[in-house]
Figure 1 (cartoon, rainbow, N blue to C red):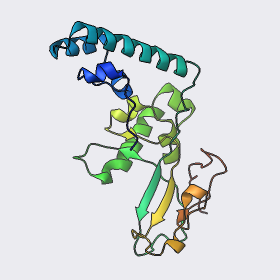
Figure 2 (figure 1 turned 30 degrees about the horizontal axis):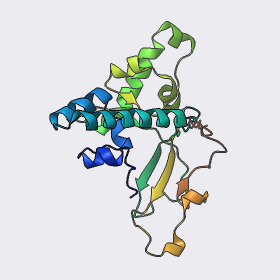
Figure 3 (figure 1 turned 180 degrees about the horizontal axis):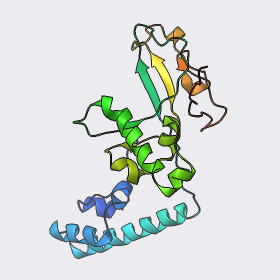
Figure 4 (figure 1 turned 180 degrees about the vertical axis):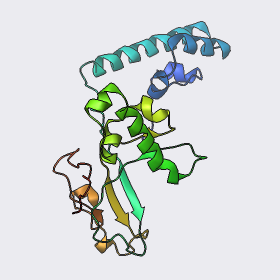
Amino acid sequence: MTQPRSCLSEAARSAGAGCYHWIMEKVTIPQVVEAIKAAKVDMEAMKAIIEKLQEQIKTASDANAGEEPPPKQKKQHVVVVFDPDDRFSGLEVTAAVVQIPETESPATVMDRIFSSAYDFNATRRGRMHPIETVGDGLGSLSKKITAEHDLWITTKEPVQVVVSNNQIPKDQANHIDHRRGTKSRWLLGQQPDKPGGFEWPRPSHRD
């Protein structure tokens, strides 16, 4: 680990004071002054310390003035299904992530979605554009409506499902490195061309 550079002169360090750049991001000059006074450092040494701190802060501010912060990394949800018996082989599915109270049964999730959709369809907007599928509901129901049924939709877009046999490969040669862009052997469904490329499944109509 790289040690932080000292921001004090030799004279200041000899006075027993210690301060680093990473500290200065959280500590103000007045707080430093109070700490130095409490340590009973003589006035000449304290003055040298404060001047050096102000100089270092100005230098750091000037150096960072033209730098733009790195762009915030966008994230996506992925559902990992443990399938040691290979029961999901060949299936093509998408998923959604929702939340309910931890004391409630997951078996109640669908009833909560249905009830939320019924409430929406009873509104003026819902009568004009009723929700007909679970996917439509998950993608468009408002938090206000779903919260009345203790349901919170975490993912408004379909989520990729990756199936794992729950084992870490011992042979690294058979390991697929996703950081290099290699597609998973266990990915269910089609790889989207771009983020958001998945669509909610449409209901199948039987004759």
